[in-house]
Amino acid sequence: MDTGQPPQLHQTIEYYKSEIVKKDEIIEKLFEEVDDLKENGQEHNKIIKQLKDQIKKLTEENDKKDQQIILLNSSYTKASNDSENFKKEIINLKEVLQNKENYWNKREKEWRKQHEKLVDLYADLEKSL
Image 1: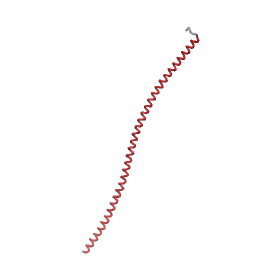
Image 2 (image 1 turned 90 degrees about the vertical axis):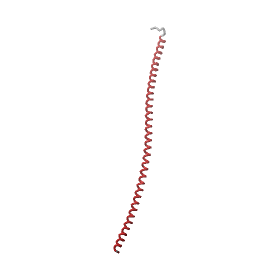
Image 3 (image 1 turned 60 degrees about the horizontal axis):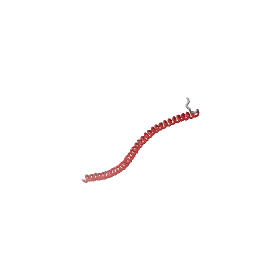
Image 4 (image 1 turned 90 degrees about the horizontal axis):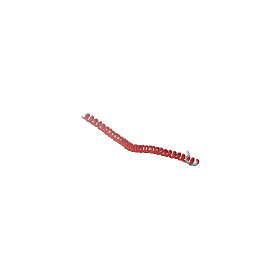
């Protein structure tokens, strides 16, 4: 195959052609890698979005649980205060009942004394008649 070119020029042209082919292959591989990176980036973006969504959902759930805890603490505090008030009221009622019992015991003793006096007076009256 005579191309009419000197052998050295032909070799140089062939060398550069092969270099161009190699560089084209390298460029094509680079484009493939870029495409792969884009796909990986998209996958990473999807994963990141999913993670952000999960974080948002968990944060919302956490906020709800925090609100529930606040309500429970408030309810507990109210119940505890009510319990203390009931204890005080029971103590007061016991004191009132004790005072009433003491009063009625005192009145009973007074009644018994008066009854004994009446019995004695009745006996004295019967003796005198």
